[in-house]
Image (cartoon, rainbow, N blue to C red; front, side, top):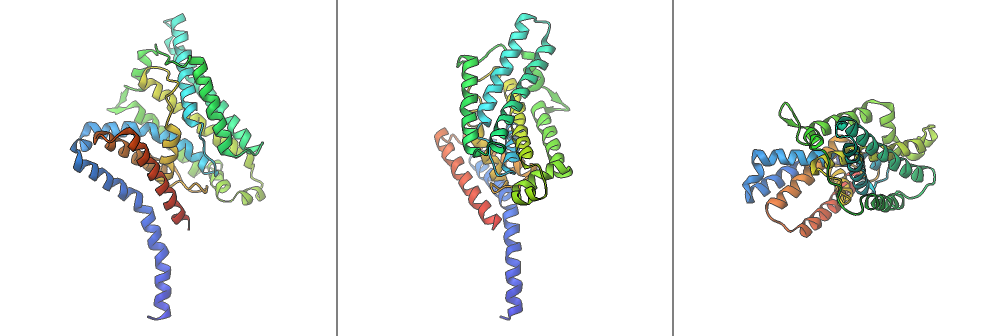
Length: 331
């Protein structure tokens, strides 16, 4: 074999590997769905596919939130407990106003949603300040925030669910439809489009990629790195708060344990979809793909009656495999 042919083969190999890595997850998703369908045909029923889409609409919001932080080489372990705190806060504010004045339902919804989002901004700003200004490791910061949010949720709720959320709120945010499309799917789609446009069509959004891929270059270029880090955590927590509001409408109550496994699932969805833990790589399509993958995996295991503890083991193994694939991809 001539040196020229060897050179061509060496040049083609990285391109072939890149193509395989690009389509690996979609292919695995299709094969997994077909495998579950072979065991339990109900998985491909129209009702279940709609259920998967609705379930994925919640997870993709949290995966997108986690993705923004991961782009900057961080992650947010407090996301799940932020969800719990917002859920309890929204329910308490809403039920409190409605009880005092049953005619002020609209005001109750507006104020409670505003309070939930404001709390998300507060949590994100705290995390961002500690990471960017105090230079504390994101793992330690968000682990501490996790406990703070859990304590807040448990304290203000007394450790019990907050019942009495108006049915009109659930009917509008959870059961409502537009052209036959459930409200959670519409809200998630609008959020994804907005975040995608910000990340891909604005200088501000592209700054997250620059900061994550090469922090030194961003600093040399005069980019306000600390501000971008703070913004990343604020965006993450605000998206978590919006997701919490949607989940509160679904459950019809404020749940102090609502976000128990959301942090793990959101990180898993982002990484499985192709968001690199090394920073600077990923986007909304990756978060969407990962959320659908995790949702189909969970749905399939539920319908095939796989034990919940085993499901956690499977999800953990999938995350480790995704990180390994990411390492190969970045090489």
